[in-house]
Image (tube, rainbow, N blue to C red; front, side, top):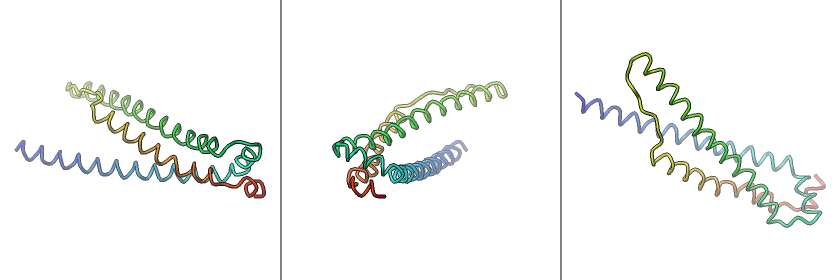
Length: 142
């Protein structure tokens, strides 16, 4: 009986991991899309920076840092809000049933955060390269 329960819970965990991974991929794609649109809207500003002598590396760094910072803050907020929600649900469950559900971070959580940050470093390069390759004269004409 317990073996069947554990097998079912294990399958449910795999399904939840797959759904969460798909959601993270969609969020990453939407972040890149928003950043690319943002770069397009800041085309004149980037062109002006280049016309005033800002090196391409500086433009790349600014855009890359904006994207990376956005993702890093999102990851941190996700962990904080997720932990707070888990604590709240654990306390509610404790009050209604009297059963304690421990809440804490596992090593896998820090590994996941590290993987997400590593992925963000690579993903941030796409809009940064688009800004890097932008011609100042063309950007100021648009």
